[in-house]
Length: 215
Image (cartoon, rainbow, N blue to C red; front, side, top):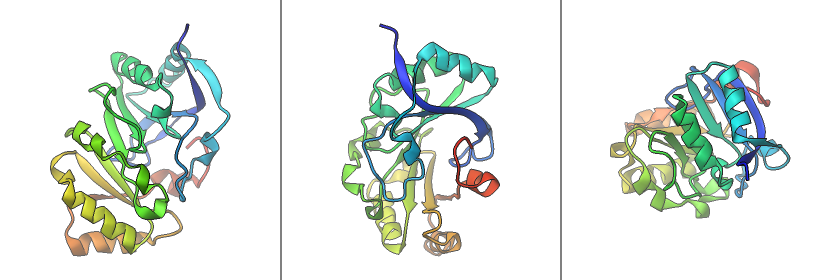
């Protein structure tokens, strides 16, 4: 049987987050997610989508002639053939990153893929879904992301940063404010006041094009 994935969209844009912010990239957004974070901005990817053979996906990616490819969702790992797609993209010579909720096991992800893993704070409504066993599967090319809604979320994130010594385990720890909920400068000031060795980030694509699909 030919391997397929349900895809919400494939598009070419600038990376809006992570340590490669601003770099042109192809995004492959898979459909479906078992989580329902309170601040989710991609809920349009929960359902629908189009079933595509993996080779069709690679052909579409190749048409953009990219260097970077990001596989995202939804939760990409909720579809088992995502693991094969990641390997095929890496085999094709792309620099590949995976954006994942942190709820799904990362054990089978190809070692060449940069894992960008969320750890969900309490205000997400899904902190009980964090799979902390995944931290042992991260390495120094990977990144961990906290999206925080208020000071309570921030303090919780700092406690996890310390408890799991994340700074020594991954390339970057990313702190982001929930858009239109937490003032960006508040989060920036907290990071500076606490002298955290983390990367503050905002969603570049939203500042450029607004909160819409395909960017």
